[in-house]
Length: 127
Length: 496
Image (tube, rainbow over the protein chains, first blue to last red):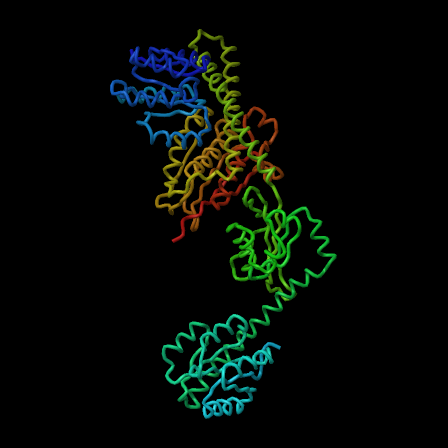
């Protein structure tokens, strides 16, 4: 069973998304801020990480930078998730991308459940 | 009187033979001639009879000669005098004199023919210069007259907007107190000087140039085209238009400056607020959509038919709200002129194919047939990718929304003359003629029995219109109630 770590400070979103991914046969682990998320990546070694960008303590970008700089963790695919204005997101995303090893995908919130599942499946089938 | 029939010529030469020969030749042709044998005498004549010397025929071989200084002095003080030099060989010093402002040089060993070839050219040049001077003075007089009209001045001073008038060489001829305050103008520093000296804004200067050059095709600002220009700390809404005389000749430009500094700041605040609110709305809506979806899919326990039905409706409403929030963001971007992110060469056919793929699902769900024909060999087109996607998505999803079950939506992309024509034809409910003019207005939605159940923000078509306008494209609608609607967008192909 593939392990997916979802990091998002919105508890409601986490719960509902866990139900969705559970039903698709994934083992879902949750974390509610960036620091906790980073700790769980190290402890649990998930097959995929979904990272919300705007979080207290440590932003999704920052977590991604740390992950991609770590030789042991950098192969874990990362999906960035954000509710920030899409056009704005694309530009800041590209800018941030210049500074860090690329996140593997990004999804703008709100996301259709089917779309999220499809993206997760796509990335996992590549690894 | 523009053409001066005879010319006043001052010959300065110490060789009496040459002096006499010049004098005779010129008098024979009806010109008035004065003579001087040295520089002092020449200066004396110029001072005593100002305006009575049109052309000076000046020897470059005068004793005690400081000729170059004389040419330079005259160029500064009496520019209207045209200087012809005479010399033995027209060598280095003749060239130097021309650099200093002399018109040409005549060899002293001239034949009559040679003399007249050079002289006639000089006379012609003087006449042209003279005509230009007169025209200049006429144009300036027309504008400076305004400055003497006290009633008019009083009216201008009472304007709450800044007002600046220039002549056709962009020299400031008039400004009101408000403008003085906006640009820090004073009579001594600004009046009679080019506007670029007082107002440091290339953009503003270019508007004045456009207004002045409106005769020659550059075109002034359009009616309704009132750009906001930043000058220092201030944001000014600017309107500059040509000032014409009775015969329609442009004699200057007038600029009106409306201080919108506070309004701009408010606009920015409003826009930031909208962004923030939209973001704050999107987060909970994301959760809501996910929660409803998983419950609806039975992931949180089995549902009764009634529960499913209610939740399905709740999900639709949630999606509607998400579209609304996205539309508000899109609309704000267009209003801020950011609808075009990046102009690049686009494969419009490819973008349309992908859009159709996305739309197929919703067409199927509704029981509609969605067909698409894309012509091969389309002209090349440059535009904003996101903008094109938004046009396609909005027009096609509208067609799907407003076409009842069993209907058809046909999308075509082909060459239309020089342009690319994008057409969406549906067999939907149609639009009443009185509504057609208003569908591009923001938040305008047609309310009828049939449309009640259709959710939408009323922003989609105004977004489309904004993008179409930003691409210098056109959109056209034809509709018949009960039969269907056709939207056509013509995208201008790249020239050349």
